[in-house]
Image (cartoon, rainbow over all chains, first blue to last red; front, side, top):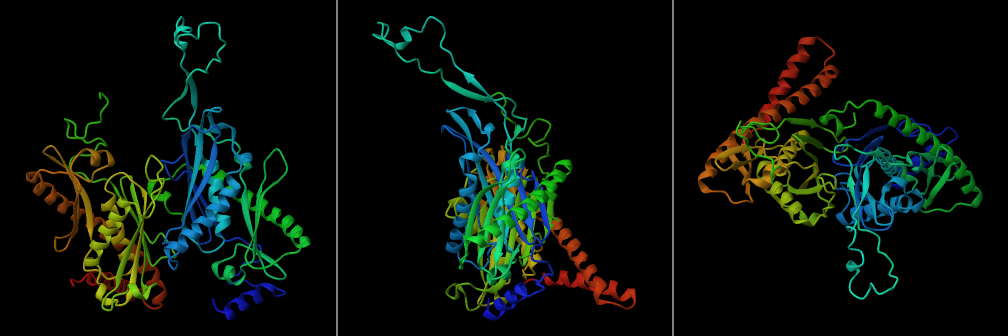
Length: 311
Length: 272
């Protein structure tokens, strides 16, 4: 990326009538395409592409004995998406993306209610695997959109708890010798386990579908900001601000995270303006994603060969 | 073990309803990744593999190049969601390494590397869903991706897995069958009938071997035919799109050009 190219792009963006290479306005997104439920073995899955950036997300539920349910994310950056990077650079990149996603999604306030099986004893741990198939810029928005869609698509198997009770009459002797002599011993809770009600039933939808955050990246150049940068634009304008907003139905919008990346600084008043602008953009993006999701729900006509490519 | 699934029942049907020598349904999609030089997805039944090719191009590390030929590097990425239990396989995983090494060795013979000295051909394989015959699917997907990328090869490489259930040979095994019966994976160059890859991890009686070997070679030819049809259909589509742009004059010229282009594509697969 030469200095001439960078300055060419920056000048075009900051001009009085801004021009972008593909003719978009500063706030236009490229084509967003979305497919859900594409991986039959996963509890939830999605594939989201914005322009040429494509991410596949899969959500798997595993049983844990930990006292609380959890959500964890894991991003994989394969060499096919980044053909010019060394393997160590790929690992670093994957680590960065994983960290950003985990910082938002692993938060306790986001964990839905129906992820617990036996409260305090057995819970579902949701693991989100995201594979970047290609990166043509704006990777964070696509990662969050894919994660969000996979979570909305997730179905939790219905379980019912099972209790084992010792047969009547064995209560005192089962506590061992000497203990029947009038000591008050705290009764241990009966052994608990659970069963899956119906192995063929996919389960109930994961609760809190409207609470998942969406990420919007505002790329910053000295006088303006723009959305959905291509790789060239990102290289020319590395300074950017990420906002993670969610729009739950019953309450006001929530800010889940904010991240300033790249070289540069902002004043507090600038941050205030960016925050309110970011909220608008995030709302529009969330609405667009939700609209696509609704369409996908209605059309369950996905042939096996059609699922792995977004046309 | 009353509910044990039968590999081959009395009626000659396997656990998924196929006959002994029946292959699973094959679905091929070409050029699925726009940013790569060549890509292909192949599905054998439920086993789904995506292969992406970048190259021939300048090598990232000069020290790894050869002065007289191209270097082929293969990277296999097994998706954590490809099996029933979620399992994250790191790069250093032994099974993944073996898969990559087998594919690399096969294609070092198949690709005409002498045409691109000091360059690199990168093959990235994504295993999206595993249901038996994964190595075979990887080889087939790589063949298609290389052809889609326009990398010259001496022949297609068609691969299939085969096994034997006591004395009955079976073709194109699923996970259930692979874990139960002795099996081999064979890759052939269909035009010459030469073998590019032969792998066996299980114990097989030597008398059974010839039978399943020959059967697998035959099956390789069938799979080759499927791949050829897919490539020709996609190339015909491209030629049609290009033919409309090239020729502004009489229509006869463009169809002639189209058939010529398809003939040239056949001739490209010349013996080394």
